[in-house]
Length: 143
Length: 63
Image: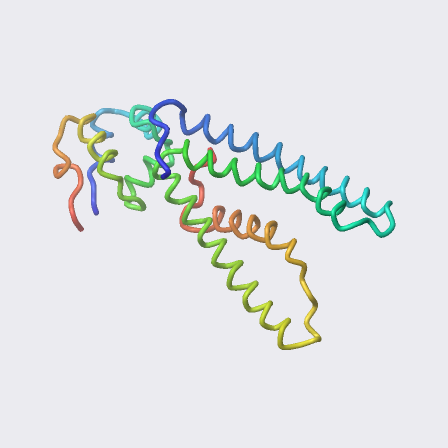
């Protein structure tokens, strides 16, 4: 259960910790992604196990980003938590609706370009960010 | 819910940030409660009531 970290950390410090860890994990993810992509392109016909192992590294950074959000939700005050979760739900629903419609179009038509599942994660963060900036919780939690 | 938080805060001469510090919430969170965008939980409502030395129903009321 999400509970406020009673008085142990101020909302401002929670925001700073969140921004720092998200920035770190995002940069790590971008670096790992570039590195792994480059590495696998240099190896012709890399075995599946090799590809699986190589993609675990960026996956760990993705997990780190999700953990940062989880920690932030536990540390921030209840009001900010309410609006952040609301923004996440708006972002999630937007992406679910969009991917559902697009997926159906892919099934029913060969003319629709196939979108890699890879884009779900960044698309969710973009939608979450958009909802946080312009949705009901704009201005909450990150100052 | 409606509340008299803004009036009570003004009577004390506190800024939103100063009130937020005492309640361990951010200035933006105080603003969200004052403007009715968010109704606080019971623990937070009790905390606010204790801080101003008033019963909860004197601070918060139904629309």
